[in-house]
Picture (cartoon, rainbow, N blue to C red):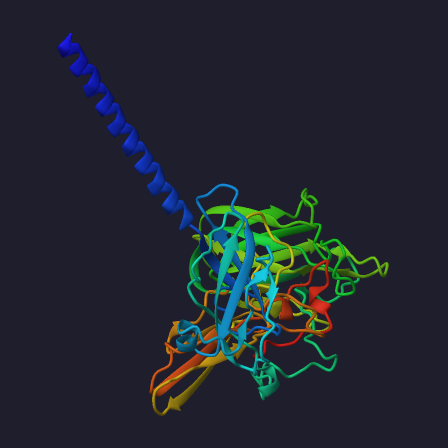
Length: 443
């Protein structure tokens, strides 16, 4: 009996120890939860560290806690003119004081007026409904805009920027033969690849009337024709790629047509029309027209910007034999992408900096799209910038911090400038080639 009593007492002692451990563990967890109120994701005007905000500034933040049911009930924002003053609690620009509010998005700055280009440093702390108070957040910064100090002017390429008499570039179409009075008049056009090259297939792109860019393509596509390849520019000896001179073409002239070949290597490719397309504007008017002719080898268009010759050619109203290989086709074959044949403009400027760089900002707008480089390094992570707007009314710019990109001595800034939506060269149903703002790229 004595032994059993000792065993019972030992069990009670163990139970008491385990209860004590559980209570101590619960108390420790409660202490951790009380200190788990954390402020993250500080934003000013929706950005983490904005360099060009419009006044008044609006602040936002997010609250995290491991306690369930935690809600913000009050906040305090401190804003200082330097990071040192903010760290010392000297909010010389604004101290909101404790504000009883659950608002944590777009809290409007209500401190001293901010000068153009002024930097502000801020932090925030909050109170919750469970009696907890957070510590102050990590500091964040912002800078105001300084557009009223701008003295910039638009620049670009003087050669490319010469306006046409209509105020915008004349739209280009493809190849168009001279008008014939009979359908059986033979017309031809050929491409010079520069040297004999292996040919995989030839692709034809139908034209649209110069009078209506939205007209269904197929304008001038011949009813009967043949496509040949040769090393002789006179085609005395030629290899046949496709021949439909005996019967009318079974396909549709309004869509892209591809003609595959095997084992043909040649320098010249010629398309000969033996039965012309009847123009609807006259009973005795016939022609041969194409928007683009491509010759592919190893997946590459060998004919892009290649020389073109023809039996005859209309060289007016946007038509030209040179347009047959200029890359500005309007109709795409399956799997192809439309490209802007105009090369991007490259602008470059060298300058000297004497002494150390304290602060440097660049504010840039490139119409259409741009890429900015300083000392060979791309600045920022933006692509397709600036965003599309009605350029007659508004253009957008971006601001970048160059503090670490510039150096004492010689520096170089460069910009690649493309057409983008500002100078869309392709004629389409939406009329981007006729927008009133269209012009050569500018910076």
